[in-house]
Image (cartoon, rainbow, N blue to C red; front, top):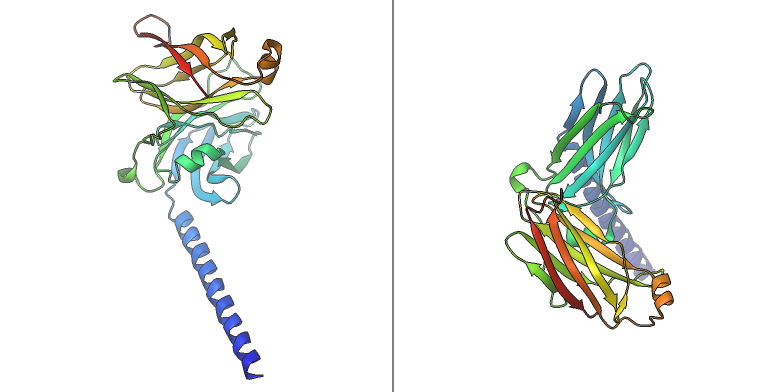
Length: 282
């Protein structure tokens, strides 16, 4: 009997410790949210846009809470993010919200990407290019077109991302102007082949990257890949070789990929030009 009571008491103690730990974590998370400093993107006679909080969603990762208010009496506005960067790495939150006249909404902006969550566990600088536009008139001038930064840990702790080199990386180019590194070949559930590249633009102008003269096992193929990248920014980009193209060419296993990496100023004025041939062996 005494043994049973002792076991019961031990279980109760463990449950109490677990509950306290859970409460402490929840309290810490709440404190972090409460301490968030509101970022005002716009506040004019047409609309209000604010980042009012940040939290960690168990399924979608880091999440921003966005307050949107449409002050118009008659117009419906689209609130959207044109571009987003986390620690300097391009990231798409796929964010657009329609808000009717005299309405307001608070919505979550979720940054969903398993590969980037693993690489960037701590968001120190979130850059957003935010747009508010007339939902029913695509030619109308934007109500808001602003670039803002959110510093979750404070501006003094913001730091740019640094790609962690691995022995499996294949460095195509890493010079004073840009980096282009093959970081791997993620599994494509639809078949075919994915080639992942890390790109960094070190110049003060927007660049465009693309590939030409592509062959797989000596057979011509065109994966239709191009990537624009703003000055000082980075991105993980994927080149998709489809299974249907492999089937047409009778390719059962990829032995080698030959291609020409091309980089040019985004406006194609010829002020910056790079071309070099490479062979990849997945």
